[in-house]
Image 1 (tube, one colour):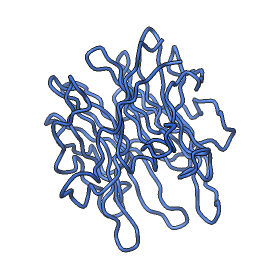
Image 2 (cartoon, helix red, strand yellow):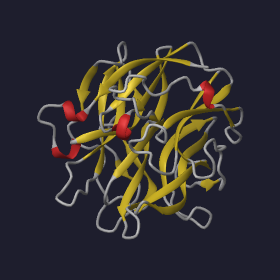
Image 3 (cartoon, one colour):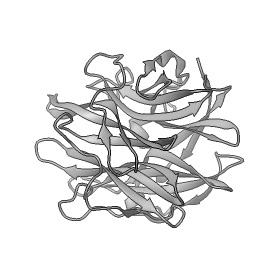
Image 4 (cartoon, helix red, strand yellow):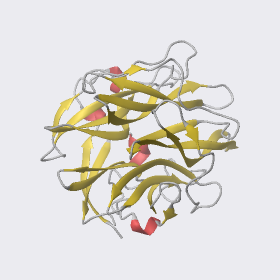
Length: 324
């Protein structure tokens, strides 16, 4: 089993004085980009809900000190990406966000949210590019690069982008079905993967890449992959289909899988090494979700969400030892 030392909450938007309405609460979908002097963490916050309770998610960032990732150096003062226009796939939100450097630019992949009538939302994956060091991003087009298809008819979201040996890999979640549970639509989704030679045109593998632990109704998201010691290591989150928002028994947990070729994964959640806090009043006492693992200056860290899927911000943990 891996051993992670929790460092606590790093950033909670609700604790910021005079915070803007577009960054009212939540810090979800956290992903890093390393610079010489700091670690940039992109995250998605929700605006203050309107009179009907509707909200919108936007992407921003905080910069952390490399020598002490618990110390915040800067908080972005504006979203890094504009919402989509009328009727576009990302009109009502951008969440989550994953970035990679390539040929002097920064490519970002994000979930675009649109509202529906019979179900609350639909999602597709868009691509944006930064040429100013990650301060802002422009979309490569008004449509998504990955969306619903014949084999994947429902939402496509939770992108994680990686480049290995010149080949692009996009890990994502694909909806399997919607169902009505206690009068509310709920989505079930599984981890999948697509490959590309240019980061724009993608070939879907069109199959689930992760085994189920909780049965066919288990949902899986955020397949974050890191390469260490001649193997690929994936940390992800999973949950039950119903009663998962506030019930710790059914809520998100962090799972783990190992692969030697990125296509075939051996799941072993007992190795993950991180779980909910035993203190019932802790910020992560009900769930641990949306992990992001990265290496900085020889140390391996994990960013993750706690209760209510990031409503109270994201936290940090440091690995003791190596991923093998």
